[in-house]
Length: 235
Image 1 (cartoon, rainbow, N blue to C red):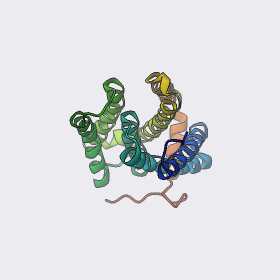
Image 2: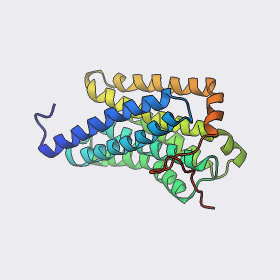
Image 3: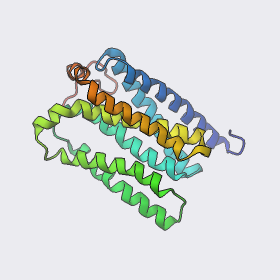
Image 4: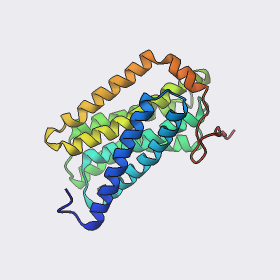
């Protein structure tokens, strides 16, 4: 696997694979555990830590060692999903803060910047697969920007669903990246199949999970480095 890579590239790949495997396991635990419970809280927080390592090593790999357009767009979507999913948990239906507004604007502009850069750099990319991923980012950032004008009663009503969708989307993204990397001969279906399954699961949560959401809304929100304290929102 690492025969034709430099030592630095191999080390980066090993860390990436280990963190990715850990994130897949922790994410599955968070998905299957009782929402708002201690196991869900801890596994979800550790999932974010592992995911941070995954996207960091992915960025290094793409910029320094080997650029692949599919992995690039998955990384872009993943970064925003994890950040905004965690922020949804912190905000709990409150209006977006400055950091959220800035992230949404950057996220909304990123797909167009990426496609323009690919065009001018004459790099190979698959438009259908790329836009299917970046389209999801455009939809999420569009909604996040609308949170500045949507009624606060609506925001307070759906924040748990928002958190669930974004974190599940991040898990689907890392699963698709894993499948696309391990089974490149079956692309793009290797990447699309986990997406179809994942979003079917998300839909089932939305349909069958109101009681879990209500239970989760009464649970405390974990902060980075402090699993027991609730977030303090800047007024």
